[in-house]
Length: 444
Ligand code: DOR
Ligand code: ZN
Ligand code: ZN
Image (cartoon, rainbow, N blue to C red; front, side, top):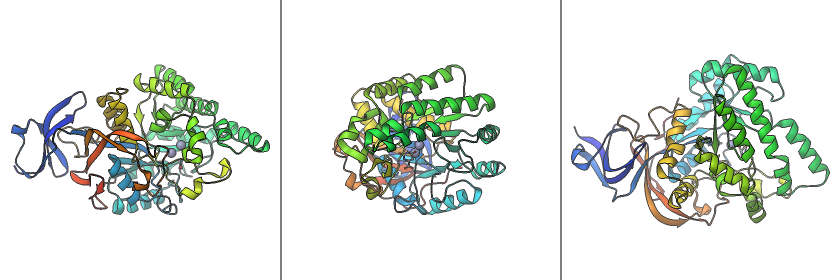
């Protein structure tokens, strides 16, 4: 059999070991991982010169925007950023304009994404207004429901305890997770009002309002709801040591709970906000060194399940405000996540196999991104080629994302994604996007 492509002379990351081997691709799938002599003949052959092949990263927390927020990002620019950063599948958040919260709004996003995406895209929805619509949304392909405890996005108010139980219960019946933005609304608002009354509008006031206590309170609230219905809850962007303690004890009690951490919460602390101002402003905010250490500890101990970017692009002018209360929170992360974590692998803080588990394998399992996230024969050919030892400087002015800023701008990193393959096709080569819009699949 003549296959489409073989990659030779590579170090291939399998789930539990790294092998010196080659890899054959046909019809968008991996058809063989073996020593070079056993590879089938191919139309095209690439010598990888000893570089690493890793499963493409599955980023479970991405805001791709588009539609009425296209000025911040769209499916094309966002998925180019993903391809450039070594991310082959993104899961898109629903806080869009219009909000993804109905069959129609999800279908519309899927249509735009199908035409414009370079990497694979899967979707979350917010809760719809009508309970019955949850089933239709899941049948169309949503991978979960995102719920903000801090403010109403979608059909259910965080203050409506009865509806919360019913909608979370329906997610359990439909066997999909509810993703939690964990901040207690009442707690947050009363603190924010008090700070505003006192004329505070600086970054530390933002951190005081969006406190670790508020995060913990919301996580406990979500766990309590899960006790009733058995729904799988996934806590987004865990930022505080106390939060991982609560999640760890819930896990020990058998609560179906998973969680994620971002590279910025692992690698930066609140002093970054004093240095970089609102560029480093994100929600949840960067916290103390002790929190950061606790997150690393939880990551290594298996309490934290995955690493996600929380790619949150904005126009720069939306961040450059006088008052912190007016500034947009978040920054792009798709182009920095993999190199930042490869740097940690190079530093000996994390093993390469753990990184692959946290960024490809576990996200595919948790969100049921089938036959991806792993370099196994029969799986989709989503993978990246990594020059593990290459040192380079992050330059946000060269991002594919429309948001050309980052708190990691100017940082030296070690490890570079030199090629990205999606569904067997080369989409990024040495920093250049070579894939066509539409290469990415809509994952249902
Ligand atoms: O910093 C953030 N940005 N936190 C969120 O919860 C939302 C996100 C966004 O959409 O910009
Ligand atoms: Zn969030
Ligand atoms: Zn987010």
